[in-house]
Amino acid sequence: MRFRTLDRMHPIIIFDALEVKIRDADSRMVKSKVVYVAVGFLRDSVREVLGLWIVQCEGAKF
Image 1: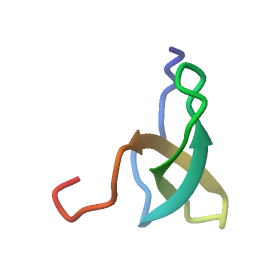
Image 2: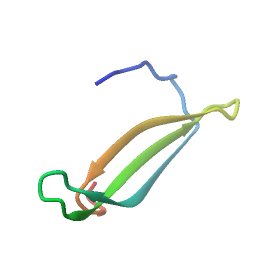
Image 3: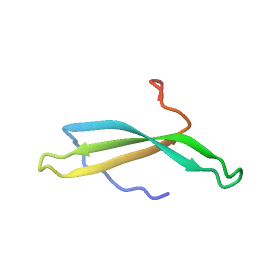
Image 4: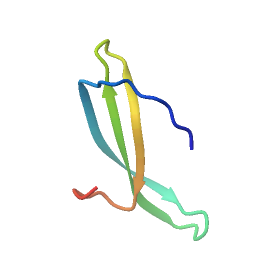
């Protein structure tokens, strides 16, 4: 895992979820998983992906 330093301030941060179908390498079955994405916008309109998380299902508790 690689870490990088982030800017101190992101005036706008957007969280979104994307449902994807993934084939499990062991069972060869297709499973649905959710990828959460956090995108931060800087003052000069530059976008940065702040994080990606893969979970089994979408929900408000994440």
